[in-house]
Structures are given as structure tokens and as C-alpha cells.
Image (cartoon, helix red, strand yellow):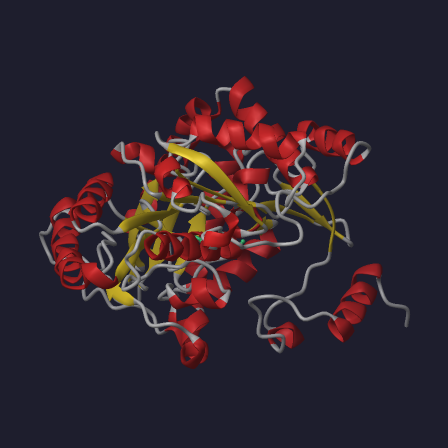
Length: 454
Ligand SMILES: Cc1ncc(COP(=O)(O)O)c(C=O)c1O
């Protein structure tokens, strides 16, 4: 019997490829492997011609749709001019223009831009730069980092050490530097005391953080967090006030603040950058994912002039920041990022997103009353629905039951890519999604959740 093109592809793939974030045995029966032939707008199409609405923007990277004509054209043009040149000793227009744009767009004072290849490597840059700053300025005791429970910053060893998602981290524990971990400000219903408001919960968690900050200030380089939404641990949200308290505390204790806006940047939380909602400027901001519209790997780490100046001296003093990746500031990736920012400039993206975010809220509001939904929470274009075993007792489903996977498989059968985080089903769609498509997704999520929780 001859195989379909789809089956043929899958067999070849499973013979040689090792996929990320996957127990490969799942592909025997539990989770289908889906070869994608092409993409257009919010849609992905497989080798059998079936289409899937990419409701999670392919791991939160895509902003303006797959095969976006404007970004495609920009990359094609750049390709004929310069595909790559090393950035040490050389420069090129896309790297320069993008740095100028990011300096102008990011919170005040962030006026030096360093490129890395992806989110995790950008986190490594920020950690090393912060440590190195204190080293260069005569404070060598500062060698540690403070991070938040429920945080996630990537999976290279430095970034992993500062995350708290056990699934990704625990196995590698013996390889990781020790971080100081403060409680998460996560305001979800499952974490708040009965009757406690979001702000008072966040304040209580902040007070616990400040005790740690005060105790360890002499040995701390920086505090790192994902502003407003801790994404990978299940879209855990906190109010902007927490960022203001933290900025103020970092200043008082002479510790840097690293804002990891790799997932939340570029409009996901409703503003271009999450830090804007608290009117704060971190010492380092890390940007990736949506930076290139979901096209090419790139990270930009921006910092302040006084930090840059601590590295600027005669060569013999050995104060330079000697960190490099072969593809630092790749011209194609920078050009994709410029084209992405042009779309923000020429379209009322954030205004339009407000309408889409409202539609996401309206179309899922009924789920608040679902017997197995703890809550529906939302920050801008990120909406999360948390399933629970016992709503009154706030009892989660055991992770081993993989309820989220059941929703995932149901959504696939309906033509939607909704890949939950454990028991949390969420929408984080490309901004070119339509209100009608949001309604359609909400109906699929509702049916999927009902089926998975029966
Ligand atoms: C907040 C945050 N930081 C860092 C990373 C790591 O980025 P990358 O996967 O590009 O290494 C991620 C990825 O999901 C992330 O969500």
C-alpha cells in the first residue's frame, strides 16, 4: 500500500529528527506530528491540505501573520544585498537602523543595543553584562541573581538557572548556578488568599522579595523578571504596580533590574513594551520573538549609557565585553525586524489590538462559569483559561493526567493550533486574526475544555 505524502514525510522525519520540548515516544500514538507545507496569515497548512489557525503565534513569535508580504519583500531585498557579515569590526545598515529604532522606542535611557541570536542567548548577555559591570566598577562580590518563582528565561544553562519551571529545570539542577528565588507576584485565583485583591497579593509577595533583596544586596548583580506576564509557567499575571515597587527597590539596594520582554514585548500586553505600563526603565531589556515578526532568530539587549561606559577603556585594562555569537546582528534578521517595526508605524496596531483583546474577553467570558475553569485571565493580547479539577477547593488536575493535551488534540481535529501549558489553555494569536476567528477559537476552546474535563 502506498503512503500518503503526509505519512511518508512523518516516517522520514521520525527516522532522523529529534524535536524540541517533546517526548518523542508521544508521536507513536498520543500526539500527531504535523508536517507543515506552508503558511499564510494566521493559517498553517499541512501536507494533506488541512489548515490550522495558529492561535499561539508559533511559540509567541509571529505578529503579523505567516508569509507576510511586507516582511517577505524586505528580506528578499536584503538577501540580494548582504546576507551576513560578522559584526566585530564591521557594520551594516540593518543593524544600525534597528539599533536606532529600538533606542527610540524602548523606555527612556536604554540607548545602547547589543545583539544576540535568540532569547536564551540574549539572557546570557544581560546576566554577563550585569555581572561584568559590577566587576569593572570595583564590586566583585556581586555575583548572584535574584529571580521569581514561576519565571522562565530560556534553556541555556545560565537562563535555565534563573527559571523556575520544574519540568525544564530539575533534571539539570546539578549543572546550574544557584539563584536566589523570591515568591511570584502571580495574581491568579489559585494563588491569592480568599478575599485578597490582586494588588494586595502582589504587595505581599513584593514585601517578601524586598526582604531577600535587602539581605543579599551586597552579593546581588540583578533581579530578573518577565514584566506583567510570566508566560511559560502558565500565563501568570501581575499588576504594573509590582514593577514600580521593584524598580524603586532595585535602586535603593543598588541592584540592576533586567526586564525579560522576550515574550511580552511588541504589543502582547497592550503597550509596545510591558514596562511602559509602570512607566519604568529597567537597566537591561531583552527583546526577541516578535522582534523579527516571527521570521528569524534575533535578540536585542538594550542598556544604559553609564553601564556601557563602565566597559569603555584602554584595551590593556581588559574591561571590554567580549561576548560574541557568529551570527550577531545578522542583516536578514535585522531587516525582518525593521519591516516588522514599519508595520507598527504605518498601522494602528495597538489600537486595533484593543478591539481584538476585548473580543477575546467577550468570547470567553462564559467560561468563567464553567465548573472546571478556575478563571479566565487576560493582559492585552494574552488570554489564559485555567482548568481545575475542583473549582471550590481550588484543586488543580494532576499534571500526569495531561488534560491540556486533550484540548490540544481536540482543537487540532477542528483546525486550530491551541497548545496549552499544562492545564492552562491560552490564546496569544498573531495580530492579523479577525474578530470572527476569535469567536471561532473560543467555541473550539470551550468544546475542547468541556470534553477534556468530563
Ligand atoms: C520570557 C522568555 N525568556 C526567554 C525565552 C527564551 O527564548 P528562546 O526560546 O528564543 O531561547 C523565552 C522563550 O519562550 C521566554 O518566554
